[in-house]
Length: 313
Image (tube, rainbow, N blue to C red; front, side):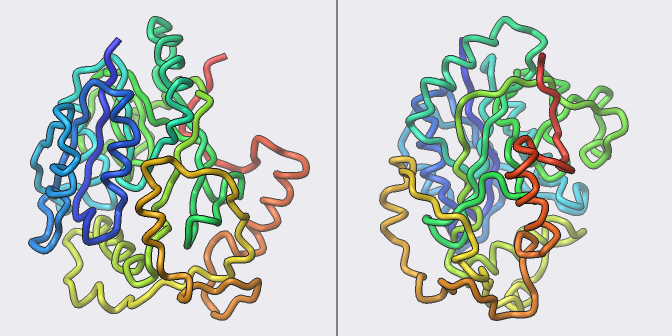
């Protein structure tokens, strides 16, 4: 059995992505790691960060992001497919540049890959999610509006494609670039759950860098990239009332130790239960807080949540 790791990335250094930690977190599990590296800005050091890992397993595929051809976030799926197309493993392990796997879950992941290798009706493996918010001590796991599970290992099959903005995968026959954004002509993957978590650090950045990352991400949904001066209009992100966010009291992946030690923006966060602004985040809206409460009391598997997968029974 061979496992390939793969990802796509651009400007990870300047936008504070934990790209090194993400790659290192599954290097012991994979036989190769394919990285589709986009045309980064001159001041970005993503290539250097990748080279510093100094692993013979890593292969970099140089790419150019063409948002005009792949608008509305589909450039992220297209770049993911570029990396996937260079993989040679039986199973393909996809991590985004802000996602990390805990070493405690390595054995369960290996076992899952072995267990379902010859079970052809299992097309992918499903992971639980922990979404960190603002700092490393607050996170969402079962709150409504945050995805609880997602596919992160897929079979090496040509008709399995990244979908929409690369959050997940679908089987797409007679593929064309338009199908990145369309349900028609696609179907959900058949998957099994593995007893493992993805630690998602996409919302853990200094507030000013969070604003810059958000602006860059929004540019993937336009026909042309936002200009730098447009991005600067969003100066800082207000993470809201941190004391309303569930606390995280468990251990982080070991590879995150040094990055966590650099946390220095606590004075920019609001550690209270009081909102100090008019615009609030989705998870702060009454509607979603009510649904979260409802799910915790009566519907532990969730209610009104879109699931882009089918569990094999």
